[in-house]
Length: 375
Length: 193
Image (cartoon, rainbow over all chains, first blue to last red; front, side, top):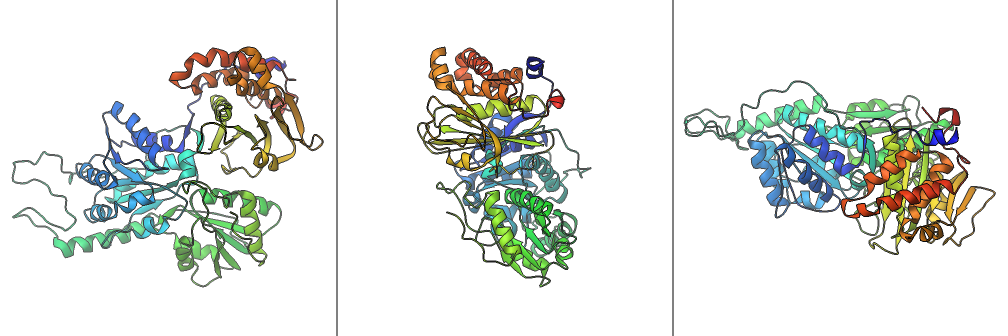
C-alpha cells in the first residue's frame, strides 16, 4: 500500500511552476500584448527576457532598446498604432521614462508599464508621477504571482478602457518567487474600437489621424487645442478616480488597530494579522490594491472607531501620506515599516520576515516602543 | 493545510535544483505551490537556501517563511537561518556525510542519510541533492516518486540533459534508503486525493 500511495500516476493539470517575471510576460501575451521594449535592470531583466521569448512566436515584437529612454519612445510609437503595448523597468529606469509617460497620458495613449521595483520606495514615483502636467497613472499593486498575472491582464484592459497608462507595481519578490499558476485569458468586458489609432490607413487621404498630447489637429480639422485637451484629460482623470478604486480589507469591523500595507509586504501583514486575530488581538488590515486611484473612502470607513493606524511599507514613508489623507484625523497614523534591503540593494531585507512584522505590529498595537529596524 | 520545506546548503550542491524538483512535482499533482530561492553572488561555496510551500488551497504563507514544517540540510555551514525556523517536531533530513553540527533530536524528527557518500558510490558526487530529494519523498510523501522523476526531467536545462538518467538513479536510491512515510506530510487517508 505504501508504494502505491507514493507512486501515483501523474495527473493532468493546467498549472505550471513559473517565476513571477514569466507569469507576467505570459499574462501580457495572453492579454494580446504584441509590442514590448525595455532595457535590462535587476529585478526587471527577466520580464524583458521572457517577453523576448514569448512574443515572436505569436507575431509580436520585443526590443532590447539602447536604454530606457529609447524603450519608452518605442512603446509610445507602438501604442499609437493601436497594438497592445508595454514597457517597464525598475524605479531607476522608470525615472528616465517620466517625460514620455506624461506625454503618453496627455496624448491619451494606452500603455502598460511594469515596475519591478527595488523595495517599495517607488510609491511616490508611481502614484504622483515624475512627469509634467496634469496626469495620473492607474497603479495596481499585486501581492503575489497569481495577482501579478491577473493584474497584468487587467492592466491592458484598463489601459484600453481609459486610454491611459496603467502601471503594475511589482518587486524582487514578485519577479523571483515561483508559483504554480495557470494563465487563462480573462474577460473584463467590452472595449471601444480604436478608431483613433494611427495605423497607416489614412495616409495620403488628407484625413490622416494624429495622436498628440497638445490637442493639435490636422490643418482644416477641428481639434480641442491645448487648453481643451488638458481640460479633457482632467475630466477623464476624475472619472478614472471614481471608477477604478480597488482595496482588500480584513478584520476591520471591530479593530482597535488597523495595519495598512501594499504589494508583497501586505502578504506578510495579512499572514501575521490573521495569526494575531486567532489569538484574540483586535487587529485588522487594509490593503490598497489600486495605489492610484487610492481607496480613500474605504480607508475612511474602516478607520472610523479604531484607535490607531499603522503603515507597514518598505521605504522611509510614502504611502503613509495617502493613509493620512484617507484617515483624516479619525485616528493617529504612524509608520511601522522602514528602509530595508539586502546587501545587493535589489532584494529582500530583514524587515520582510513574519517574525519581525509580528513584533512591530504587536508593539504598535500595545503602544510600546517599536523595535529597531533589523540590519 | 500548507506544508513548508526549507532546503539549505552550500552553492554547488544542487539546493536550488532539489527545491525546484519538489515544487514542480507538487505542481504536477495540481497542488498550490510557492518556491523562493535565495543565494549569494557566487556560484560555488556561498550560502544557498530555498523555501517551498505546498498546499491544497492558495498559499497564504509569505515567500520568506516564518516557520518550516521540514528541512533538508545538504550542508549545515549556512543552516542557522533554516534551523531557527523549524517548527516543533519538524522533519529534518540531514546529509550526515558533511553535516557536523549538533541538532536537537528530541525537539525535531531528524533522519540522517549519507547522501554525498551514496552519490559518490553511484558515480557522481553531484547527484547528492537528488539522493536527498528521493529520500525526502519517501519519508514524507509530500509529493509522489513518479512526479518527482518527471519534475526532475522538466527542471534540467537543455545543456544538462545528459545527467537525467543519473539523477533518476539517485532519486530512486534515496527513495529506497529511508523508511517510507515515517513522517507523513499529509494525512495518510487523504494522500491519494
